[in-house]
Amino acid sequence: MVIEEQKVGVLVYSIHVNSPEGELLEQATAVNPRTMVFGTGRLIKSFEDRLIGLSKGDQFEFILGPEESFGEYNPDMHMEIPTSAFMVNGVIKEGLLTIGNTIPMMDNEGNPFNGRVIAVENNKVSMDFNHPLAGKRLYTKGEVLDVREATYEELNPAPTGCGCGTQNDSCCGGGGKHGHHHDHHHGHTDEDDCQVCGNPPELQGQGIGSCQCQ
Image (tube, rainbow, N blue to C red):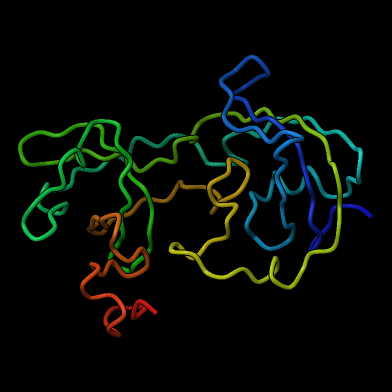
């Protein structure tokens, strides 16, 4: 059996920046291999394409350029946002606006994404909305441990807060390139807020908001 759409690949691999000697970004070992569902749109297409056709025991090694993964680094994705946008009940959570902190945000259409704090001054917060791996080349090396049919549950996962699959936190999974620019206002969502519509805890489950927090 080979890796193809609606198949599951069990993989061990490592992902480094640029080369085997570069910073280690992600690793799946034989003790804790990674299970990936192919053909569902939850993996970076270029990563998936490199593995299509491989079978149990096959090894792989390749480099994904920025154009194949998370896009080139775009200075235009730096934005200034009023500190008031981060207030909940008139208060900014202690430590929230720390330089380097990644904050879950939401646009006016309810789409969630992350921004990184790069400066705070004059009641404004400078945020970087580039993906953390934007502009980086991803050196990937690994082996296929197993290939099997995907189950119904694997092909139809329960929705998460961001509406994406569980592979979204991986270098090789996720929503593809983050090269677009958000021109509209960004609102902060606190850790306890609904990640879909932004409702605070006291309004969740009351049929309010775009998802009604169901």
